[in-house]
Image (cartoon, rainbow, N blue to C red; front, top):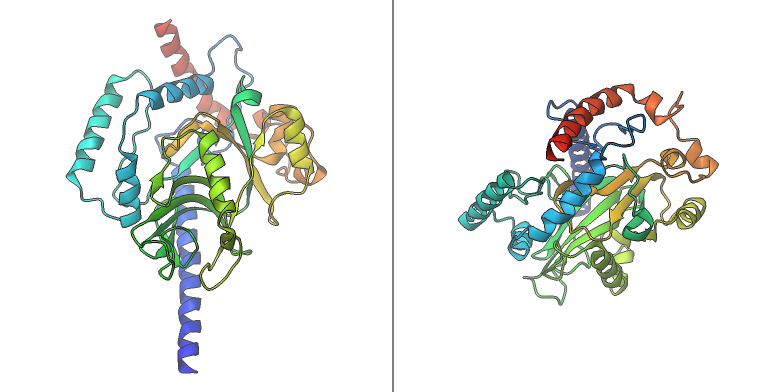
Length: 360
């Protein structure tokens, strides 16, 4: 009896600690909104739609997408070692520091932005690929982009290694440690203890489910520098091959469910939004992934984000009444709803146009 009471007490303490860490992550996100250095089109701020500006000028977001795609072609990084460092939590390697210094030096010489993967102070901070608001609809949306519906939940980095599965907030805070059927995440598994896996997930606490957005490493095989088409195929294949992941058990304490992806033509998007969602929780928003982007740590314009009620205005696609009903009170349009965001973006746009004019 005493042992059972002790276990219940420990479970309650762990649950409270998890809630506290998620609350800390939310506070960090809110503080990020007030930072002086404003990152273009960050989803930490509201949608900065700028359709009122001159059509003849170059699109800031479209230009940045092209530069990111060019940057990843030239980028060289030892992702196998990076995945191993995440799995083992060992970052005191001088080789990593030299690599970062080398990448920083190259980035300063380039005329485009390059996302440099750095081992930060808190080693699990800034390891997830984060989206930007879909400010400009890509001209190649139908051909080169995927759509993924995102449920309400907490963004989580999953690290399965040395017989345990651990989840971290996107700010790098550890949340919980448990057993799973992921390769490397179960101490009683027949899989060797030295293997590891890394996943990008949304955690739904109500349904005890991790919804898998993306995959960075499976069974010690990293795929950071693989394009979205391959990563999504591999993610779907590997999770399908491990059916025990999709049920809660002693060896798999939380469910892992693969989120499906769809083509981005208007007919497909409308069908997806009018059909039953692939999860029981509410829809948080829509993620748009460029098919050729690698898994890039940090914010990238090659992953876009929209709220469901923004789809008609941005994409001209009819949405069901349930999504229409999620519009904020008094909402008329993106432009009128977010005047402060327009002011900030107008200043950035003006600076960008000066640079573009100089280059031309």
